Image (cartoon, rainbow, N blue to C red; front, side, top):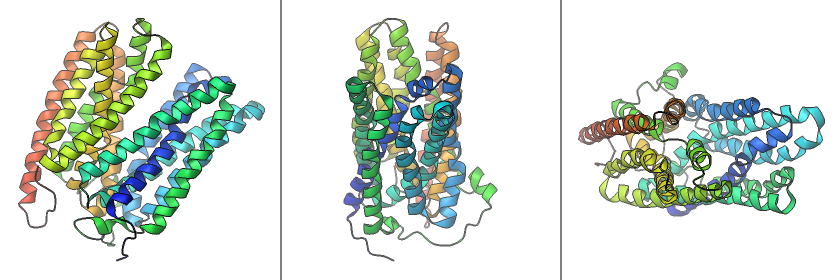
Amino acid sequence: MTAPRLSAWRAVVGFGIVSLAGDMVYEGMRSVSGPLLASLGASALIVGLVTGAGEAASLGLRLVTGPLADRTHRYWALTILGYGMTAVCVPLLAVTPFIGGAGLVVASSLILIERAGKAIRSPSKTTLLADAAGAVGRGRGFGVHKALDEVGAFSGPLLVAGLLAWRNEIWLAMAVLAIPGAVAMGYLLWLRRRLPDPSVFDDAGARPRTASAHTWWQDTLGVGLGRPFFRFAAASSLATAGLVTFGVIAFHLTADNIVSLAIVPVIYAAAQAASAVAALVNGFGYDKVGPRTLYALPVLVALVPTLAFRTSALVCVAGVLCWGAANGLQDSTVKALVADLVGGERRATAYGVFAAIQGLAAMVGGVLAGALYADHLNLLIGIIAASQVATSVLLALTLRDLRSDRAAPSTHAPAP
């Protein structure tokens, strides 16, 4: 076992800094990916296909990259490869306006490759973070990481907006994003040198190097991850399906003339701030009182359509803040509980399966919201409220299973 050269807290903050810089790159790109593709000759249909396929790849490929990480134990290599794909592909978008008719094909390919990079790194990076956070409290660790992540999530688009206001050249903004990309890669490589095996921080000790007892197909289906894991995955997927996308909310805000178009990015930035605060508060609460803090998630999800689709700007903003807070919990405390439900040797597999289930739920929820928003808003609000009651029930069953598992000698999960 290699002794760590960093404290657990410094490791958690280090991963947060990497995520901050990485988010500046890809969130900055995503904020203008539509206009970039349109400037290269893409229709609205092509923009939708490219961005939609990218998000599907980002989630669906984790069914492969999660088990791959656990089988090979190359968590660091996959994390570095995934971030490298983002750090290279986004700045390369700067050349696409200058290569003629090939520009649209190259830009679309680079966007898809960047999203594949997200799928490659995410299960491995989250597993490494879960290991390091085991020594400081996973709620706190994931909360601090999410807060730093959100700094990048809104500063990247703001940087791009500032560059566009200065020169109105998308290619220049893409080129400048090479700087935070280089910061992310440099800091990640430094972390790898200082902390070869974060699993030494885990309660159960270093991750075992035994071969998987399951086939690739079984790992893809999540065989052996346990009933509590799948109950919690079902609960979280219902919350994800009920969490109306910001695109639909933004459509409501502008189509009904509630706020001007220029104010929408400001409201979005406020939602990211709410996400960071919620992740910190709920994360610290998770370590003090246990997973019961996650009962806040279905409440927040149910409040979003109730508030965000009103005609008062202040009430709508309150709904958007609830939306941001719910997203913060989904990307922090929810991941902390997954780590406590699944042993260290299969956490990357679990995160891959969990993300795929959430991705499918997000697609279903998006279709539902799009179909009901215009003419059946009250029905949409009612369906989401009912689904969050089911989320609460499944969460309660998960916590009951967690208490029962703790009574077994081989279980290391904390009591809620």
